[in-house]
Length: 121
Image (tube, rainbow, N blue to C red; front, side):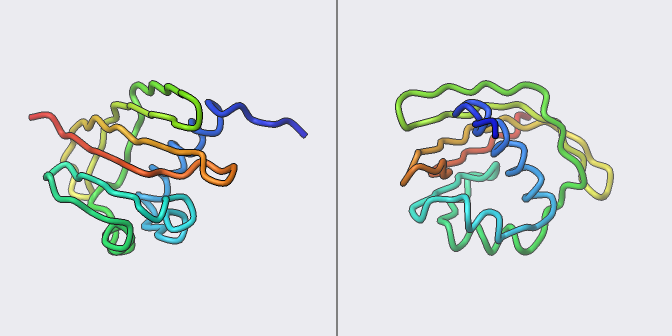
């Protein structure tokens, strides 16, 4: 059995986060977000974990999301994932987004504690 490095684990979590978002998989997020998780959406709305799970369960306007760049930094039990991606909505609108997700190792498992999404004009 090969153990993943923390960087590999965070890279996998980052990709799974995107897939779960597109699939409206609130159960995945419930398992991988810290209880005190907070997200600042691209429209500056703040979401705590329960509100974020409701938003995810309602479904995404995005049909596809492709990562363009990903940068992962780890300091102790904190990991920061910064990425740029391109997206397409179900109606064909396209754009890019930048995001920063902060993870903390809690009881030996990486949990997202914060997310901030920006859609440049």
